[in-house]
Length: 193
Image 1 (tube, rainbow, N blue to C red):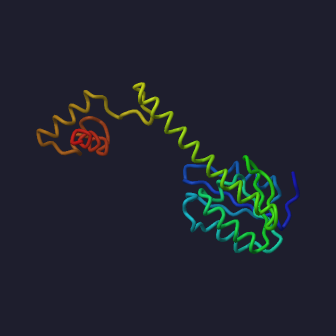
Image 2 (image 1 turned 90 degrees about the vertical axis):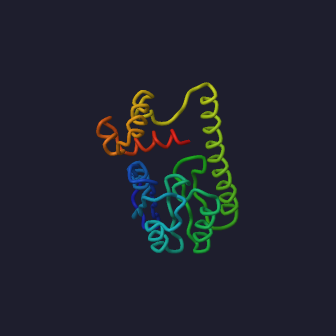
């Protein structure tokens, strides 16, 4: 394990409270980060407390260390804005994993290479999204659907609609069927569509 140094500052981010940052934290600690700042926020959110604190904490000559580039931000524009702030202050960036793993200095070839790699990372993300959508469309064309299974089968949905037609409240229907009110409303909305 590398001995922590004062100039390596880690930043870890997960998008939701359901995700665990432990893998990132372990990698940042292993890399020798003396201090690690964390966020539980979407990469789309540019106002992140942990990132702001990390940037305020850092001084010229320091290195911001992230587990993977997408932990820094989701779009090329956002990542480049952060990178430009780092470069302007003489702070390097180190990425531990992924296709962009490496250290990027705030000048010369490091800055150029970083800019190009950020654009490629966003392109890679867009390609993954496109392939996922194509896969879902192909599955749908074959009669398969993705996502969560329906809470009620067609017979139960017919009972929901019939009870509602007789004037029964969605709350009463949900209790009688043994499902949530949201499920009852979803069935009724599907009928209206």
